[in-house]
Length: 231
Image 1 (spheres, helix red, strand yellow):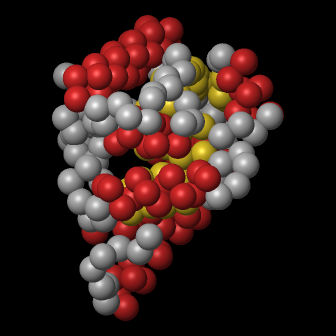
Image 2 (cartoon, helix red, strand yellow):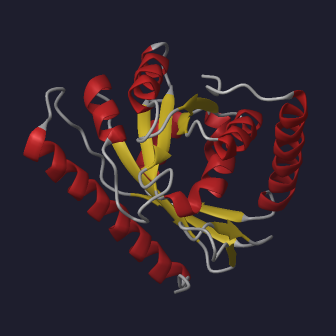
């Protein structure tokens, strides 16, 4: 879905240039990383058998996750902000399908677009960050629960960690970027399924359960890799 506001030719050129340069740099750097995928059962189900599903993670790991899962062409919700325009164009270059919207603006339309994308063919995926677009950090929102309930597809928490990373300390999410030749460990948590009529206290309980599982995964992987988040 295109951004809602018009951009000047100069702005469009900047969006194009920055996204192209970022994609080239990211590919060159991240290709040197060694990736370990745990949960071989889910690798078999989603990567090899191509079953559809919805992935969810924390905002801190979005950059590497977009690179790694981009070739699977997931539909990913990205805010309609000006900064989101850079990310949407970058995502498209990496192979993903940007869907413009967020919890604060255009979220319902974006969820419908993602649901339509998932239903349009076999082996399709969707994903987003649970605490986006602006936090609070490690607090889950309800959007992907609604999408999973609407489509009947499983919601799968995913996380990665590495010891050798750069951290953007001034970003609200403490963005992590693996350094060249870093070992990156991915893991997935339990799969969640929701009834189509979920609402009220049941919805809030599901949101809290998802948040707890994402934080459990984060803490578990950080302990394995030795990563310590800066204060």
